[in-house]
Image 1 (cartoon, helix red, strand yellow):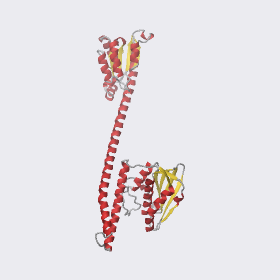
Image 2 (spheres, rainbow, N blue to C red; image 1 turned 135 degrees about the vertical axis):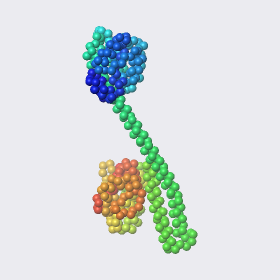
Image 3 (cartoon, helix red, strand yellow; image 1 turned 120 degrees about the vertical axis):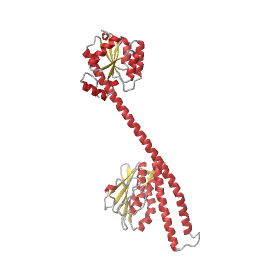
Image 4 (cartoon, helix red, strand yellow; image 1 turned 90 degrees about the vertical axis):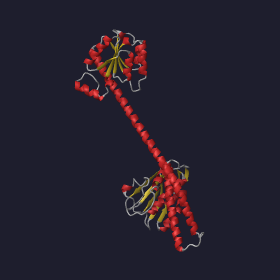
Length: 407
């Protein structure tokens, strides 16, 4: 945006389009109409846009209207007029420092500056010019003043744009948080609503299996077992959604305390042993010899490891191997669950920790699930001050590492 100064008509027109006219205006306040008219003519010939103010009230209105600069004769700033001007300057925003050129009397600057002018100088960007003033001096001074004023308006525009951006970001964040709360509340409500009839299905299936309602044939027993397995599977999916909703809503409490790694792994191993035997998978729990402790919520850490082991079993073919290892570093303990499955495609590694992304390691995978297990596990790890990461090469298995702070 250009400063309005002595320039060609085309440049002046372009400058007027780039910045509102009021911001390039020079307001003039003189004690007599003749002085004001003369000053206006001189400034107009120099290429400025002067406006003569009949009184100090009009001058103050011009300042409030974002005037570019002010030219005022010292004798026009008597006590009452000065009070009005000082009040207007005090009300200016923090970015505004109005350029004011004060035309003093002859020999005025060789003496002490009057207190009234000092008060004005303390509230604005004041330049004192002793009369008689050369036109070239006045023109140069006003050009510099308008240039400084332009920088102030640029700063104002920047501050307003930043405030608008911050306001938009704040509103977007509030909307996203509200949407997340609504989603979490909906998932929680639906999970509770679904678990009630599922528990009833499981309970009645068990009653029928026990023969409470009469004799059950072998074929009927098989059907009831399938009903029971389906009910437990669906219930586990709903529990995953409920856990995810709780974590998203920040409703999960953590009891962080020292937990021995060996105790943690020994509590998990019996839970996966039946699955290991069913698929004839060789399991090596070398981490059981890890004589150290981590700072964690034991229940949450066990949930993460159980999820990692269950995934490893799910995606490891019969006759494969699963190994658990422990590495103690400076301030952290890393527990790694590695399998000999066919691995994870490189392009999927970044996505498998995202909610509702299923861990499918081959295109013909028929494994069911919500795709929440790894997302929940990573969130739990991070909320305990740790991390969950994966390294995998297609065809060479996968290794998930749970890192937790060392106790």
